[in-house]
Length: 341
Ligand code: NAD
Ligand code: TYD
Image 1 (tube, rainbow, N blue to C red):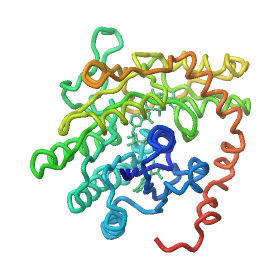
Image 2 (image 1 turned 90 degrees about the vertical axis):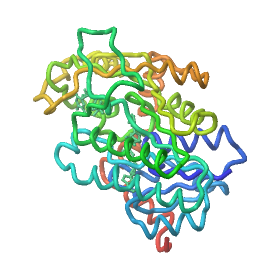
Image 3 (image 1 turned 45 degrees about the horizontal axis):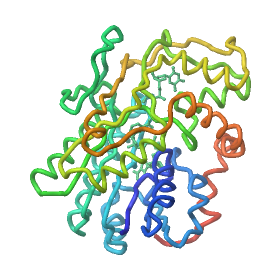
């Protein structure tokens, strides 16, 4: 089997490629990533010399190049992680989110139809459902919850989901969609809550908490997200949507305090700052369907996962440093410089 993974140089995509390499030794892997600011080829450094792995620096909105890659590689399975993924950036510059997250998905689906891909999997988010009230812990997002996205990011993801459903229904594209809660773990770009707080705390810089810090997210260790996608692409039913969640709701402020405790840094570093416009209050996911139908269970509880995560960043401070000084951008040229895609 050949699996083509887009956005594989990002946080979840790189974790997923390692997951496939470890769990499907007979698979070959193709990674397509345009290496935006969030793409870091260092994330894949242990795979680069693996004969089962090929990397293409390419933009998923580039019809000609994507067609060429699909024609050459003929993948069996496509998993689309490539996306602009940061809500704050979508508020500043929504256009890039519509291009990559919506049009890019369409380009990939057209190529998948043309080259007979057997499964197209769209990696989506629980944010497409909008938010839930803080004072109704009984309410969770199910796959039947109406889409009600609030940020340009979540609108772009919801639009892509609807387009995937349309391609499945209208053209018979063998597609599945997963909607996952907030991930944490190694290789996450330090603009997202957990790695940002770790990075700042390590440098004794203020930890910016938006608003009152009482917004709630449901956190899932990234490897558990990878195992869920692995199950869906192999056993999930075409045309279906699967929610994936950690059953692990936390207030942002409690996450920040946990990070400080693990790093033995003072809570005095916490700084409340202006709230994010349109800030979703609470996300909480009902993953009953994937548990019942595919037998998925997350393996890592939050206490273990956050300890592992903090340890990963402590042991990979060079990785953080290369992002901070921008040198991670040069790694592609060092490895593949001069290569014609
Ligand atoms: P990320 O920002 O870390 O990585 C995104 C990757 O996509 C980067 O390597 C980037 O270079 C690449 N990319 C961006 N635009 C591209 C383009 N036009 N062409 C080719 N490559 C491009 O994101 P992530 O956190 O790893 O998220 C991966 C996917 O999972 C996204 O689709 C996101 O919506 C979804 N998701 C993320 C979370 C989370 O908590 N991080 C939760 C649920 C769903
Ligand atoms: P984030 O990691 O950006 O993920 P998302 O917005 O997709 O859930 O943010 C997680 C939560 O943390 C969200 O409620 C916003 C909050 N947050 C802060 O309080 N401070 C920060 O510096 C960041 C980046 C996020």
